[in-house]
Length: 386
Image (cartoon, rainbow, N blue to C red; front, side, top):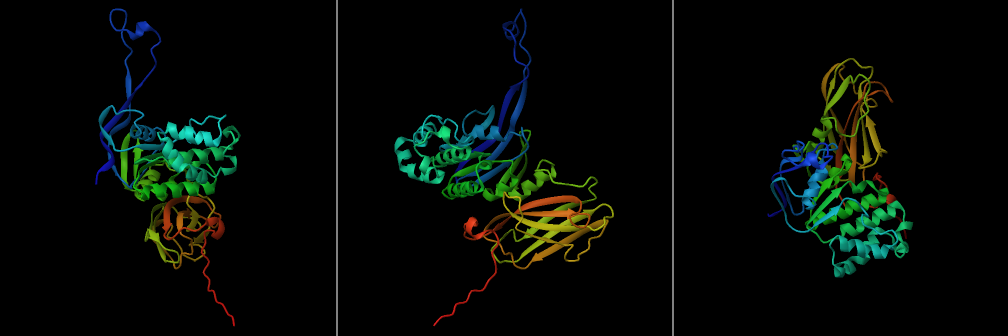
């Protein structure tokens, strides 16, 4: 298969240092010399390949080179060294609504923005109704966008950019805007683009969102790829480096979670789920136990939870152990969930010693969560009649 995006030992360097303050400092020769220039490698010797229908997650701390990588793909800037091949048109979902004219209506801005993004007038007319429907701005279509809310502008900007006919899509932190319903629609739209054969590069600091779209990811740090492979493995490495969303810990951290694994990684509604944890307790603790909770991916409110303390399971303190848990029936609607394992040293609420999170996919046809919620209630229906 021909790669749509291919980096071959690509580097991108920028000048770094103080600016020249006068012409004498800028001109070499008898009057003076050039100020020595320092160079910073935003991307250093990067090699990767992305085929049609693939989505690649790109994570890393601020300044790691993530945005520079997307700029290279979008041809905003050129590599300093190496070879970069991008086949086809690139759609960039980076700054939603950039280029909107505030005094123009939503209708006018659709045509205006689409033209800036490279969409022909005939393509814009063909997709116009779909753009308006996705943005959900029908009643305000002929209203100047300066009267739109921030959410309405975000919906319109995403809708226009995501309907651009392209082979490659770059996404940088745009899914953190809008309400929860709009974010779910964005995820579904991006998944549709992926199924239609687009190659997607997804940059975000919201680690719970990465497994929703990407089976494969890379971890960038100071312009280098320091981890690559399965998304869960890469995110585990990222968290181990202390660059993930901070977890709550007690002042002493008398214990830690070494590993959390689910078997299988993807399950269906009503299936059994086995979990395996490896723990290290460094010192005696009053009541060490593990709490497991499940929340919708991207959300913070758990929809289900269990505790080893409630089950009367004791952990060696101090010592190392492997803890297993079997959930006989996973009563969740299809979708993506965040599994949070919390190690506590005292009875509830207790002092949090360590936390570990991973993404769980419940397979099946997604249902409207606003109607059905997240928990699938086990029930038996019967009918009687004459």
